[in-house]
Length: 244
Image (tube, rainbow, N blue to C red; front, side, top):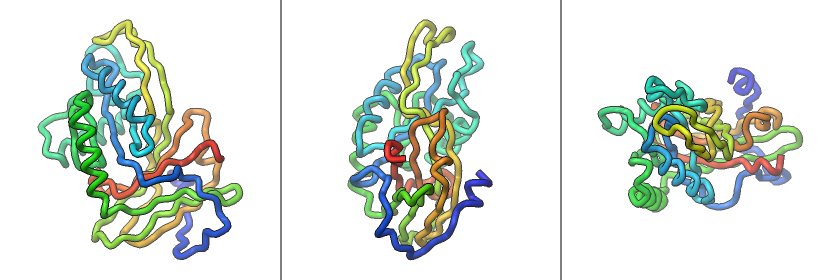
C-alpha cells in the first residue's frame, strides 16, 4: 500500500482530453458485498444468487469470505481476517446484534440475509433511486499508467478510496463440514481491499502504474469511495481489465 500511495499524485483540474477511459460505461454500479463461509450450509443459495448479481452491469457484486465458522471443522480456503473485521464493523454500524452468514450489505447502508433475493433486489432498486449524492469515479489510461479520478461533492464527510482486487470465478471443493462433498463456485472473490487515498469533498486524481493493477492472482479490479468507518458508499467503478 505504501508504494501505491507514494506513486499517487494530486492533480486537480487536469486535462483528460487525450486519455482513454478504462471504466465500464453506464451509471455507477450499486455495491453488494456478500459475507459468506464455506463452512455454512445456509450460504450456497446466497453464493448462487451473487453469481447472478455478478453478471449485472448495474451491480458491483463482491464475495468476501469470512472465517467465523472455521472452528466447526472446515477452514474456509478463501477467508481473510480483514473481511471478518469488515463484517463486524458493518454489524455495529447497522445496529445488528451479531455476525452471521450469509449476509449481504448493499451500498454500505442496508443489510439482508444473502439468500433473500426479493429483499436484496428491492434494496438495490431503492439505492438506485437515491443516488443523488453520487461521486463520479473513473479509471483513465495514460501510457503505462492509470489515473483514478474522483469527482467533487460537498457532503461534509470524509471518505476512504478503496482499490479492490478480485477473482471473477473460483470453484472450490469442500472436503469437510456442513457442505462436505459440494463443489461451490464463487464469483468476484475479493483478494485485496487496499485504501489508496482519502477524500474530503474535493476532486482528486491518483496515478499508478498499470503493473499495480494487473496480477496473476486476480482478474478483476474496482474502486469504491466509502464514508469513513464502513459507512455509506458514495461512488464505485469497475476497471475494464481487458483494455490494459
